Amino acid sequence: MLSAECYDIMAMVGKGTFGQVIQGQCRSTGEMVAIKILKNCDHDGQIVKNELRLLQVLREGDTKDSHIIHFLESFSDTVWTYLVFELLQQNLFDFQKQNNFSPLPVRHIRTITAQVLVALVKLKELSIIHADLKPENIMLVDHARYPFRIKLVDFGSAILLPEVCHVQEPYIQTRFYRAPEILLGLPFCEKVDIWSLGCVMAELHLGWPLYPGNDEYDQVCYICSTLGLPRGELLCAAQKTQSFFQRAPCSTGTWQLKPPGKVMAKPMERREPDPDQEDAALHHPFFSMKEVKPSFKATQYYQLSQEDLRASCKDSSIVKIFPGTEKGAFIPASQGGIQKATAQMDGCPSRASPSVGCSSPTRPLSLEPSAPPLPSFELSACSSCSLEPATPSLPPFEQSASAPTPVWIPCPPPCRTSPTNAIFNIVSCPVE
Image 1 (cartoon, helix red, strand yellow):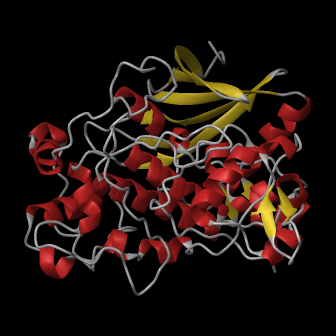
Image 2: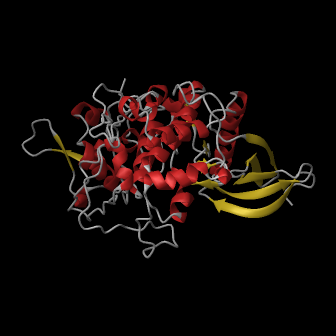
Image 3: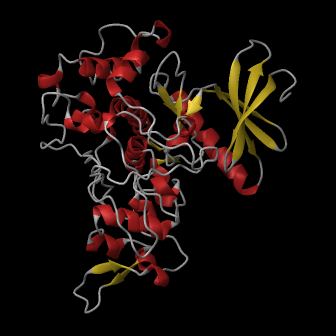
């Protein structure tokens, strides 16, 4: 029992870097909750204080309809602090693992991403940077009743925007999802969360991380292999440039990556254009589907995609962005509608072999010999959208949902063949 008058322990849910989460039951109401347990000592104590402060900001900010986990209360003893949240079902990483890391159909990725963007819009209003956006921190609410309705969780690494200038050599964001600003040591803002979200979108589509670096140097190499080197003025301004870049021979002022053997055992660098603002991203044609509407409005695929977006929210946050989704009610999975139609329309059987590493957190690799090129993702708000229909059957970006989806297996250094056509036009916050 955690507290004589409060909660009983029911089950262990999971463990993280700074604590563990258990399922508890409120003795007075019988309600099931998730309780995050953190240690009150030294560095961990500061983490607890920071998370409590951020959770209080969220509670006062009215985040009920913003796809952010609901914080209930906290209590502590001499050793531990207990944070009590609503109980959610499963995070996206566990969901992927349960499904053998099979690529997720694009229309489900759209539904998930739209909800995360609603959460990021709210965080921006409150001047909060989440700073650890990854599949493990995006949780399904109740997948059987509300398919792909999600909430954003874990504010242990979150930062208030006015305090960013006081963060020295920040070690934030999980490596696979770490923005170039953080890698290079450049000024950063809430847009680092947009970079992470783009990486999550790609991972859901591929069944494998977009940039699976073994260390920060490896991470920079992956990014540069698809997006090119950062601009010279950014490398001159970054704090960590010398750790990962060097001037080109017979210097003309240009930079190049250091060979692997010359890299210091110190973190790396970063790259920098400018991603869409969270609210602007919500109006991108990928979510509004306005580019495909004229040709595909009458199709079952289009109607199902709209139904997914409508079903993902009880509130009007997404409805405001996607006119037309306010009509009709959500059909629970028990009535047989959505999930059956989803399987028929997506035609997406399991494509990842369960034989390699399925029982461990290591993700299985796809060894398809003649995989088609990866699709091009375009996240910046531009007039030349990649969603322009090419055929009358299905939007080209969506067609990959029913085709074999390759998983790129990186070669060890120094041979780095990369999926150069899987380019995200995601950019980061410019140096002031």
